Image (cartoon, rainbow, N blue to C red; front, side):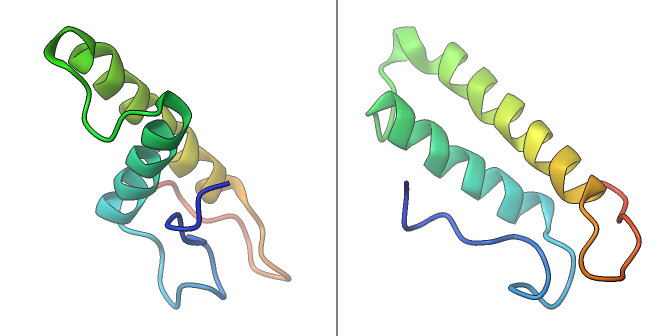
Length: 76
């Protein structure tokens, strides 16, 4: 969907994804879905809430994934 969103799990990343990487991916997703690179002032709050919700869901997903023989990781 959005080529600038990178894979955030091993083996694509050698280490656990950072909060900054997760938030950057969430921001790119919300930008793509909303069609806004930067929201107008009257949309800023809902835009930021969406970014936070997507980041939280992403951290939960990454924390629960099992990667070929590795146990589930804790969420970032």
